[in-house]
Image 1 (cartoon, helix red, strand yellow):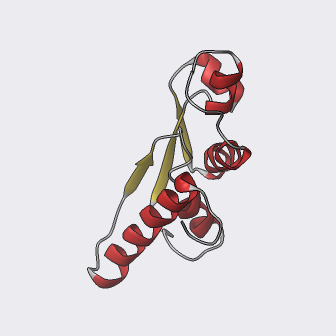
Image 2 (cartoon, rainbow, N blue to C red):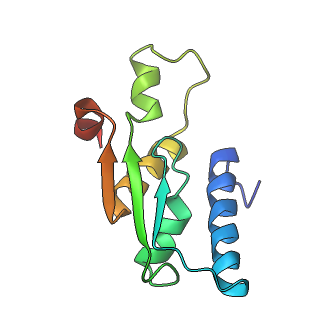
Length: 111
């Protein structure tokens, strides 16, 4: 884990580093990057774009799923309780995307 960051947070950061390294060292250009909404995988990449660090000419898209916390609270997920960290990452990634794709009307309302 990175600096007290949970597994999901660490994975999102590793995705960001991997994309950044590809763009920086391999001179790869992405037109569009599409992240799943569940788990906040695009969180750090979207923060980097919003702060003007990377992805200037790349369109970042997030699929809107029902947040893990809501699924758990409704009793539809028997896995362990998602953390506030994951909920924050999912919602922040969705708000920071250039475009969102809703998987359902309910997911759109939850975003």
